Amino acid sequence: FPVTIKMKKLNILNIRTDGGTQPRIFLDQDLVKSYAEHMREGAVFPPVVVFHDGSEYWLADGFHRYFAIRANAVTTIEAEVMTGTLREAQLYAWKANNKHGKRLSHEDIRVIIRRMLEDEEWGKWSNNRIAKELDVSSMTVGRVRVAMQEEAKKPAQTTVTYVDKHGNTTTMKTDKSKKKAPTQRPTTKPDLTTEPSEMEQKVKELADTVNALARHTMEVGHARSHYPVLS
Image (cartoon, rainbow, N blue to C red; front, side, top):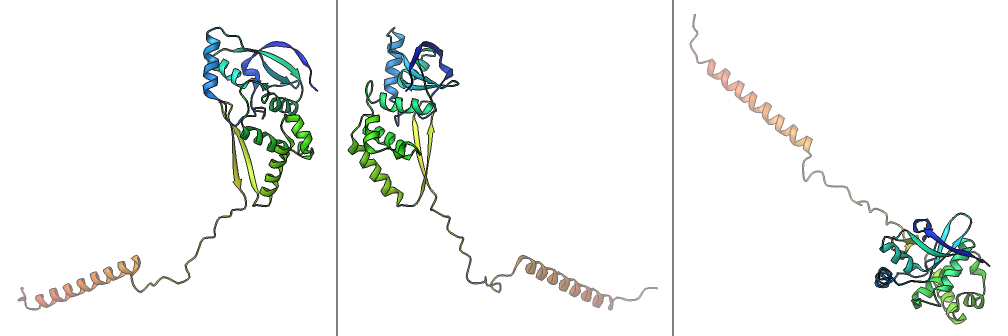
């Protein structure tokens, strides 16, 4: 398991929050504002916890504190740096956030359990092992597992997770089973005799014009036949 390296002051922009370590569906923005205000008044908060995988720093504990510091436009943050992979940071975060500070809601806990059960490795763990890892009851894990099994019998869905700039996690489901209905083609041919086409109308107008000119020519010829011949 990861071990603490040391306390370190990190550039806040070097800490990543998009690795799925944020266990809450929504951060409490009022709490973030309250923390930010207390910080401006000189209050000292515990350092956040980050995991260093050799390349990236993953925030694992202290999301409300992290965003409060950002709200105050402070560029550095005190952090307890631990060695470990992103997956280890996720497990630590999901467990840590259920022990102190603002407690996880029941819905937050269910989302975390679902994420573990959907994982290729963690999903093979027993309900008791997952419950022990997350400090929840095995019955809670069992209920979520049964609900997921029932959902699996329904049309397949794809889950897409987004993390916004405030650290909130949004999950959207898209149903792949829904297909676009085929376009219905008309079963009968249109009645072309009820209304002439544009070309037919132009032909008719042209014929009317020719006939009018012919009549005019005949009238002029008839009139000239009555004129006296001049020499």
